[in-house]
Image (tube, one colour):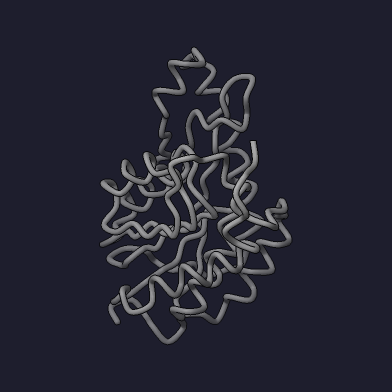
Length: 227
């Protein structure tokens, strides 16, 4: 099968295009939340364009048994961790509750490792009462985005905008009902994985994330909560 040409050169270009779409539509007190690692360079461009703080929504995918790339569920950190299960995938794979619990605990341990690494010594914005823009490099099953959305709702955000460069049309229709606003540059009916829409879709490292957080450290400093 011949695949169409990529839509985006890399995640940075996708972020700049999303920032253009969001310009003038986002009012009030904003925090941009990236889903690491892939969403970070996309979110950086949006945070820079909006002069808004850049933070991370620490979410981990739980892959299906025997097929770790297929998202069975996702877990998001917080005072009360949320697990979002894709029931269709769970039924198809026969994943047991015990298996989900075991994998969820393993991913929570990775979230804790990332929290210590990414946020050590950093002051994070308080999301309560603010507009959260949740950003990833694309949607596939939507499990990680849903977990992030639920986690932020639990922290008291006033409004959630989900912004992604690409997502399958059926998934976009579903998740659009779960947020206050959904911004997606492309919603193809035929979807072959997020990476297929990028010319450069290299795997990112912890060092990449730390570098972007350092570069974004001055964003939004003139916009305190309530402004």
